[in-house]
Length: 161
Image (cartoon, rainbow, N blue to C red; front, top):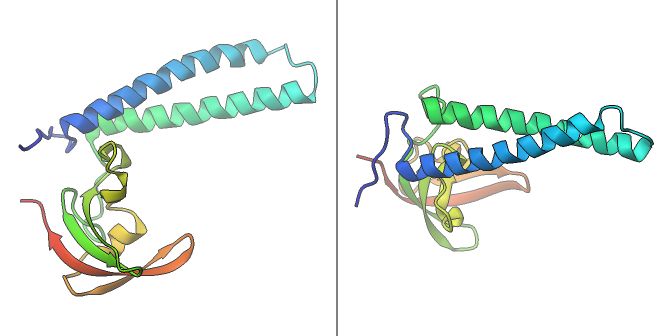
């Protein structure tokens, strides 16, 4: 069964997850905004001042994330420059150095990750996702992780139709 994908390139499930996250973030922002407003003039010592700064920083971070998710709902994932990434919906099967074989579904944005399938989802803009772009089955692909260089063997690639 195929899932409906809107003109933004987001599936119905992705839109639902993004909308739910936006609702949670907006609720948290409203509560935090009241706390920040109450902080003005109520700071009595260094610990209170540190807490007030932390709340203000969190409020700014929430604002940025809300803007990002709102844009995502309106326009879809940011277009790539046409090179260096696998298209969303691509399915890749790779063998890791430890011998494990994993089939992963390529997504454009993290919010498209199916719940419970995080280990089988690959973001197109991730180091591995970008390293696999333009490769063919049988290729050994080296990519950089925070822990250093890793290598996989690309066993299969199925592009979306």
